Amino acid sequence: MKVRAADFLVYDQEKGVYRENPEQVVRDDVEKHYWLHVVRSIAKDWRLYLMLVPMLLVFLFWRYFPMYELLSCFKVDHSELEVSEQLFSGFSYFKTLLFGGDALSVQFWRALRNTFIISFYGLCFGFPLPIVLALFFNEVRSNGFRSVLQVLTYLPKFMSTVVMTSLVTMLVKQGGTTTNMGILCQLLVRLKLIPYEVGEGGLLNQPSFFRSLYEISGIWEGAGYGSIVFFAAIIGISPTSYEAAQIDGANKWAQMRYVVLPSILSTIVIMLITRIGGLLNIGYEKVLLLYKPETYVTADVMSTFAYRYSVEGSGQPGLGSAAEMMNNVIGMLLVLGSNVIARKATNTSLY
Image (cartoon, rainbow, N blue to C red; front, top):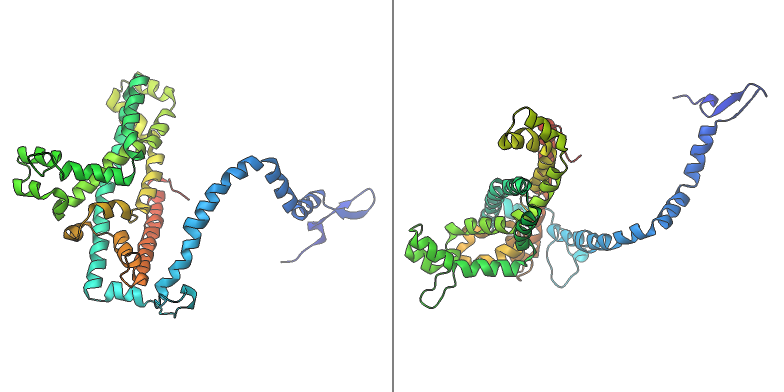
């Protein structure tokens, strides 16, 4: 491409000479003093940037520094050596997990299957309920009564995982003076939904009941808190939309279907994409507090599998790191795929 003087200079007809383009002079000045403008902007709004420091430190210590340990996925483990000094082993850990054919590989595929199943159940049953709760809150006309209901549904989210799992354990296992069954087990036995022997042994000791207990407790814990985003989107809808629908003869159900849901569709899609992105990110804390060796067949997930091999001293931390890395890679692919599908289907996406 040829560069001409006219691209940078303008002709002064009065003096008959070329001089610098004023716009180019401004651009050159901005580029020359770019960092000076940045420093001045930071100095002007230093309070806002100071509030970012804690978040940056959290990301630095809990997101970026741990990436150094991912090197153990590709190196032979020697506990007496630093990760940087260990020998490179390539993809041997990944091959062992995926194609080993031994008991370790069987446990890995079982954990991956359980992770998908539990996450899929949570997506099917746990994602729509916050939307339903937000629609319900929007129809409550008394502000005081609605505030009380919202606080009651938000409270379980602020309980620690230990407290929440302890409540679940007491409901299904620990009992009173005459029985070892919890209150929930006694109710299910009296309704003849489960045999007496199952209730006496404890539902947490039964592999077939673990996923149901996990999902129900998760919905109870997070449905109210998750409705905040959807309720905020609903109250942002213009009242004129409801008035137009009422003039057309729409009742409450019709207003929800043709006014509320289309108005918050973009919010639903964005939240769905983020939920799919975290489909495999089941925290190990709750599962670790609820599961037992007897329920590994349905309760063991990727995070607990990685925990056992990375933290509990099994002697193979590289295998746990490899499993966790594959879990994160699959999660990233799910985010990218769901974003593409959402963009083509609803013309709404994260990026």
